[in-house]
Amino acid sequence: MIKFLRDFVQRMVDKLFSQKRHIKMGLYGPPNSGKTTLANRICKDWLGEKMGSVSNIPHETREVMIKEKIHIKHKNKELTFSLVDTPGIATKIDYEDFMKFKMSEKEAKSRAKEATKGVIDSIKWLDDMDCVVVVLDSTQNPYSQVNVTIIGNLAARDIPVLIAGNKVDLKKSNLKKIESAFPQYDVVGISAMNGKNMEEFYESLFRVIK
Image 1 (cartoon, rainbow, N blue to C red):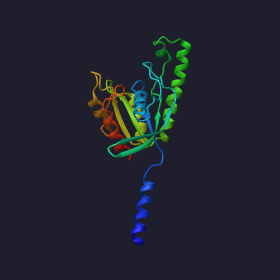
Image 2: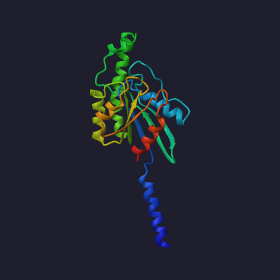
Image 3: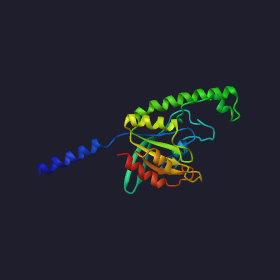
Image 4: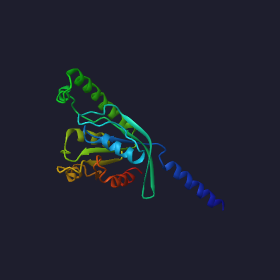
């Protein structure tokens, strides 16, 4: 009886300390890949509310946004985490690019400055992440300097990664290119805009976050 109780207590202790008490999951990727759209989809699915605004203009998200205590369930599994939506990573931010969207020079320079700070903050936040979902536009070439920079930073930190190939509902989508570019990671194709394959996405999360 004493041995049974001792073994039972040990199992409970092992279980308690094997589970992370507070998981932070970050959404990373280049501008306009659909990070905030995915964040909104996750929040709508499980909290019934949006996380942030989206736009066709690059770097709409220029500050790190956090939504606490998102609790998801899938096939008798449960997971609670804080969702961190980060500004798009870019290797170069030119204020003149924003002027193409009918911004004044002053507005464009201000946005470029905020976007640059957002990129720096995004990289800093990597040190706090327990898991990262890299959101890539599946209609774009995955072999870009930005994507390689993101993956390189994640690999250096040995952070669990799931790649979400977004916009699979579009004709130019090519998920196989992403799978070929980053074979070391799980890749799931989704459309964050219309919710396509989100069940598969959530299932993949449980495989990545252990």
